View (cartoon, rainbow, N blue to C red):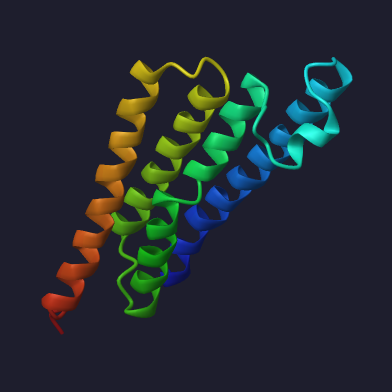
Length: 141
């Protein structure tokens, strides 16, 4: 497997962030055109309408745990540790983040959202374990 395969899940997660930004812009525009908010309300978003508030919170989530994901993926690439298992776990992490985002910006049901977050948390941790093992146990030549 090519070491650069680890970049594709990173690219997919970045695309998700762009999609959420676009959704946020659409929801804020809808709030203004429907009269729920004025454009001034977004200068300091203290009166964020519920639909855009959930979206902005999700966007914040996409800059928390995923930052550790980007770091571990780059580290795995740097040390030639992008194994099939690492890339698979990276894709599963991205899938968990996509599912988490979908729930967060639609029903926002915590009973669905929390397990999806925990799955992503565990997958991210597993990537760090793979990195640690790769560094601690030299490959057999």
